[in-house]
Amino acid sequence: MNNSIELPKRNPLVLTAYAVAIIGMLGFMVWVIWPYSYEEEKPNLHASHANPVHIATTSVPGRSVYREPVTIVGSSQWIELKGDSRQQIDASWRRFAGRDLAAELYVRDALRVYAVYHRYDAARNRVLLTLGYPVPPQQILPRETQAILIEAGDYLQHPGGEVLRAWEDAGLADRLKYVADLEEYQLDPGFNVITQTAFVAMK
Image (tube, rainbow, N blue to C red; front, top):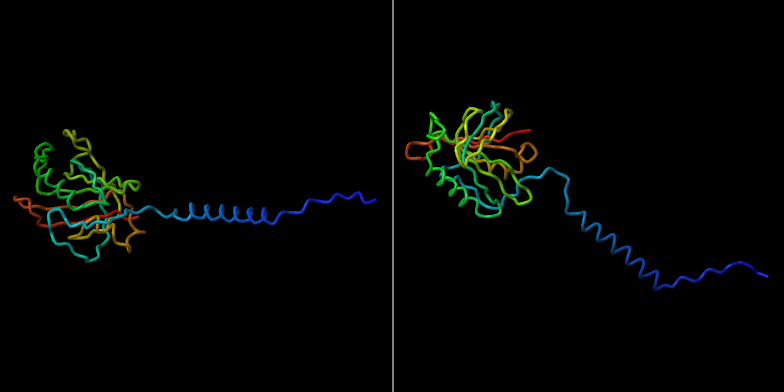
């Protein structure tokens, strides 16, 4: 007598369906994981970024300089990088020009203005622009202003340059911090640019 147990035969259709399901699941996992990158997030700039005060810019490479810490107090506006950033920056400068913030801060040189790009928001692809003046750390803030500490460290100095253009430079992507970078303007009494220099923080 044969007491062995005979296992049921496998249905080819069931095996085929199982294999298709496994392949489909693996494909879905690859599709979900593939788009993500573990590299440092960089600003995604799609619009042109001409200077709001229309000074000609240069592509001459900058040089590394060390800057001491400085506190900038000014008025701020979010710049949507996926939109027309030039128009937004121009509007921010017009609002700044219409307010005598230098008098409110008791600034001696009202014609030396700083534009600080900070708080980059990768999720919404935007950056906060603050236009203002350097002040002592204990300065009392006027209404609707904020203080930004520009940390000490090495900066790429670019005469005639712009922060957003530096951020667009693929050759600098692994060298920059993307934390708080600034442009320094020297204006004439008519609010026209005499000189402009960009400083971007380096790792």
